[in-house]
Amino acid sequence: QGDPDARSYVRDVVFSGIGFEATAVQNDDSDAPDGRARTNARQAAVFAPGAVMLEAARNIRFEDCRVRHTGGYAFRIADGSMSNVIVRCTMDDLGAGGVFAGAGKRNPDHYMADERLWKRDGNLPCPKAYDYSERAVAFIEVSDCEISRGGQVNKEGIGVLFTNISDSKIA
Image (tube, rainbow, N blue to C red; front, side):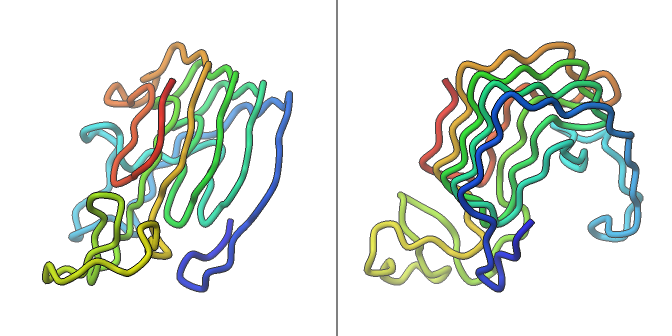
């Protein structure tokens, strides 16, 4: 885990043929938004954790890996993560779903639109076409994976969900 606000990233790691198994179900109410009790019983099981969690991760690759018996998602790709690949992986017996990728803590002064970072007030875009904020999630690939028996704990879990993300593909 890196720190996107400090621009400190975990970089250039390949996991090949590794198995990740048996994570617990977590129901942590300590930092629930708006003071309400945190529960995973919401659309897409948005509060479910990942057995494999990436934050501020760049150029991380998972190939031919297995993730099984999770309490939440198999993979959770969060703020500041770019150019990560999950390929030919098997995900089975999942508390929520397979892959949840997306920025959760947005920079209040900026938002992503049309592959460029725009000021919130609608002024001109930043000069570089791919000048992303430090919390942006982009260039994520999930391909040739097998996902089965999701929603074992949280029926709202999704097979693969990309949200608040750009320039990415599911194949």
